[in-house]
Amino acid sequence: MQVSRNEKFIKSRARVGSYATFGGLGVLVAGMVATFYQQYIWLSFIALLAGFLLSQVGSYHLRRWGRTPRPDQVLENALKGFDDRYHFYAWMLPAPYVLISPQGVYSFVTRDQTGQVTVEGWQARTKMSVGKVLTAFAQEGIGQPVREAVDQAEQLTKWIKSRLPETQVTVQPVVVFIDERVQLQVNEPAVPTMEAKGLKKWLRGAGKGEILKGADLRALEALFEGRANT
Image (cartoon, rainbow, N blue to C red):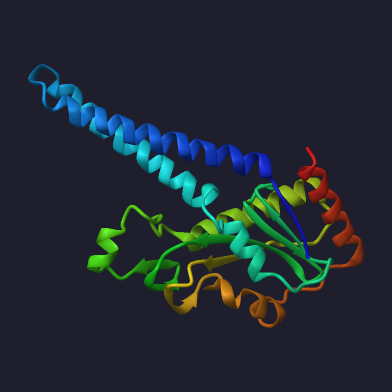
């Protein structure tokens, strides 16, 4: 399998995460110090709020771009074993994670939840516990991954058709939970939803789409490579 990723973008976002995290901690410390001075008590509240927000921005960026393995690395590892007709793109196209293959084009939305997660129809929810509360800021909120996956796939499909109007392709959205500690329960999800360890098996089986024509596949590869090199 071929892999292309926007290393410059990833590194820049990781730096933002580091700066925001350390900056947030610094502001929080300054806010705590200000609480000892009556005349600056109002500044302490502002500093504590600003520090918290900066820390959350930093945490968000580090989860996606600063940790190892990153979501794109987990997906790459899950897809190992495919031949060079398969090409995985990370942060180079209108959707963050995209796989082009002879059997179709896929875009992936990832989540890093641990513990019990249920995906039913369009809804995704986690089971609350003491451990979840204690680690609430250590992982991203689950949000609406199914809706996000559909929106990203539609956006990529429109982008492709605006440039290759003769090409018949519809991007398949997929939700992938990348943390090995997740306990995933899936009940008739609106889009395919799975753990990373099951992704390759799904692509080789139930996930097979309509076989792309050779001309369409070559046109898509040229389009994606052109975007990747800009």
